[in-house]
Amino acid sequence: DRMQNDLISDDELAQVKIKSIVQSYMLTDSGHGMAAWNLRKEFFGLPALEEYDERVKSLTKQDVLDTAQQFFNKNKELTIVIDPEGE
Image (cartoon, rainbow, N blue to C red):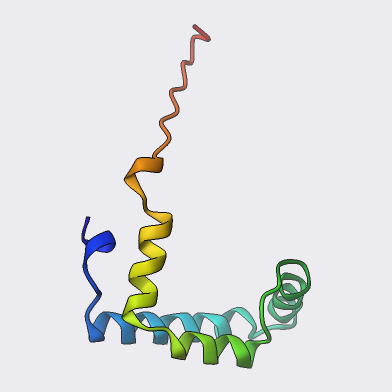
């Protein structure tokens, strides 16, 4: 419930930003990684690496809360039951 109701702290936001930017550079550290990033950029509209970093840096605590409320909505839960016996 915290993710849907409370703003994250300044420290949490800073940690998430740093981690996201570092991961983006680690992913693109090789030729294979850069090719994969470019494919995602073309097919899924991912921005260029520099623009991605700027977008991450511009995120606010309210942006995080708004996104959490959009994607972690308890009213949209889905329960799947798998019966190994097929009954």
